[in-house]
Length: 227
Image 1: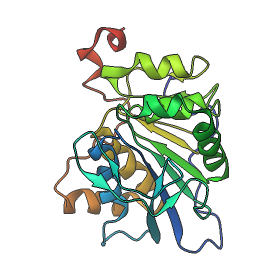
Image 2: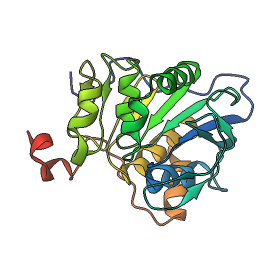
Image 3: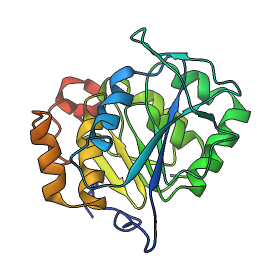
């Protein structure tokens, strides 16, 4: 079996009878700005055919603005405790992921949100948070090549794929670092709508989409992922 072959089936399609989908993007101090906004640009593109609403979800019990690693603030719409059901749960990376993994109460709330979701997408070290929940034990996943060892330490029972721009396994899609989240979001969009829709969005934003998940030029730049 190829390391990129899903062990838990294809990416789920939109359930029959679904109305507007709700995307819940987890935000927290120290999150990476492009990890968040790159995929949100894809899902929020006016010309795509996906009927989806984007909501920012605070990792704390307060709705105060969070400050990304790039000094840009984002004001959340809900907390993990009071948000409505989230069809697509999104976890970005950034240095703040380490803090999330050290807070057991927050991890319990994240775990519940992932479990209720139809799909879950992570970018960069956001996969470390997902791995810490234990929900992807035995699943394929990837993460930022420059920080690969930390997510591995959070999920030793995950089948970590070193050479991958993104990995899909069942309802989970995990991407490599930062800009790879755009590639993964386009993949998710193509699965929920069509390849033509995703290609149209990529063209509209003048982005060269890395469509082949296993083509990862950054894996060779780091000793840990080169092997």
